[in-house]
Length: 476
Image 1 (cartoon, rainbow, N blue to C red):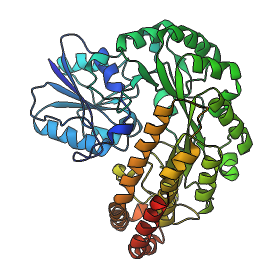
Image 2 (image 1 turned 90 degrees about the horizontal axis):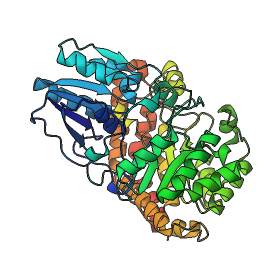
Image 3 (image 1 turned 90 degrees about the vertical axis):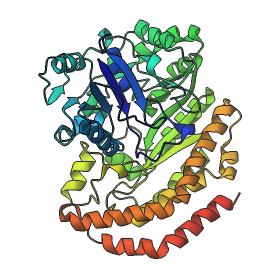
Image 4 (image 1 turned 45 degrees about the horizontal axis):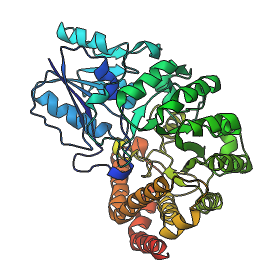
């Protein structure tokens, strides 16, 4: 039996920038659950083309919202050739009825307790339309099949993905993690994590946990066990846990090189509405100093476009990042992913401009913000990114006391490359918004009042936008 597992790209003719590419792990997990009688091929389309004519019996595709459209295209090509196609991942879990129109079966949620049954049903010609996971015990399953990972799948830094916990107790209005993994934190045994590290053969790891520092006693035990391994790692954490000096120091001693923190917004009003623990930015600034004081690079993730934020949010965000000498930052446009409260809210208010999932990527504007226009959000976001990743800005933020200079320089240059690509792609971004206008005309149920006028503004100000962004890049 031959099984092909595919992680689709965003679009067949465009591949993700190699410098900042993050590896996937879901398909390696699925492969580990597959019986030995199957010959497995794992394909990541960002790295290689898909051979639709290859000899196989069954195809598994894992996709998120931004690449699900391409996932559906891939599924259609294989089904035209008579292959059985299974869809899974975050987007099919949130919208299983939509996904079922493009596949022979859909895996809803995690695969550990459903995939073996699915394969058995397939072999006995009784495949069901969907398989829904329960809240599984993650400790009783084999290590991911790291041997199947394509060479250099982890991007320029060649990071190896690993997981210690699943689930998130928080309930952010724009995040769908609890819908997929649940709100209860489930941890793998420490000895299992150590075994996964050793089996992978990697030296630089990406902890894919949504909050790697969430369980203090567990992480202290894990950091102690990791220390003799002499590895390096990066991960994601809630800013609140940084106040635990002993924990953050243990992370650094275990090989932590950088941490990703979801600060969400510098707007006090937005933070209050989101029920952030620290409404005052001074608490975050103290935590930033503590992380950097331990020699760990601080990566901030911020979102612009929340309700109530006007154009001042862009200057405020940039000023905060520069004042605190943030090493790297992801500055994202608010994206109302299906399955989240913010999606339901905007859909109910008629503010979604499109349901073409290709545009749900943190950079495109897919909704009507308030009080800004779509154009103002697009302009402000791109200008802020350009300013932050100017060469002069990178030099000003350099903090020799943090160390890891190679990571700092390469990380900033990688993001700079992406931002400059977005600048060059500005005419395409404008055409994308024009596509949204057309979609709104054809689908009145998701139309946006005043959209036509704002898109006329886009057409008349395109050259001005491009000139202003170019000027920001040249002032170095």
